[in-house]
Length: 277
Image 1 (cartoon, rainbow, N blue to C red):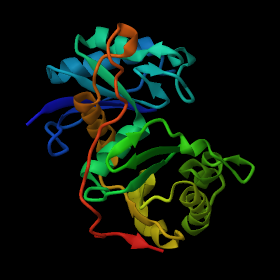
Image 2 (cartoon, one colour):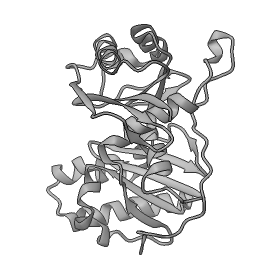
Image 3 (cartoon, rainbow, N blue to C red):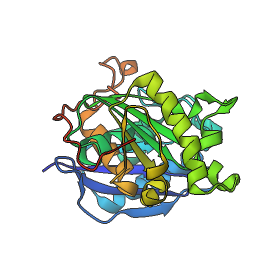
Image 4 (cartoon, rainbow, N blue to C red):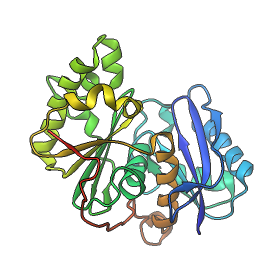
């Protein structure tokens, strides 16, 4: 058993737990601390350090970030302080915790976890994980290998960004019922089908807990669709996977670049629980 601490930075809370990366199970209850107002790097750093002290796990730590992450640097900051842009966040958190920290985009982390231990377990080929919430997060995985930072919620659709039209926040903002929202999501997913031809869509975010309200209304051409299984644990699990598997030191330190992927090869799909439209 390999116990790796995973930490998930969210808009309202920062939560973590040690993970058995051979099974994807949390080894202790999650511990959550409210996200500091404004989410400035220095304030978030202190919370990450507090979580590391709380669990006292030695070894690498995986941390998710709600934005683009490349070789340990945070390159976007849509819903956090702009001081994150261009920041060497790996180094910031490594210094704060005294452990080697490996950062990963939050949707990518959830995607890795779902593909390995959740709704995508046993599925080979192309898996596209989408999280519907305030925006739309995405993770593109082929034969277990992550293509990082896809940001497919920002695709232009219907003269606007897709997430501004089809996210869960858009559903609430426009007072849509589930059937009306599903029609928008179907248009978005059909567009992604044309671009990526995924074997499987996994739908995560808060809506995954209410799949009975929308799943039957989703219309696809050829892909299979299932709701996510790991829910609020996905980011923590994926972060731990990244810390265990993602890591050499970045090139800027004169060594090989940190790989923003976690390679997994899994068996072919068995079709269980799949819903095809």
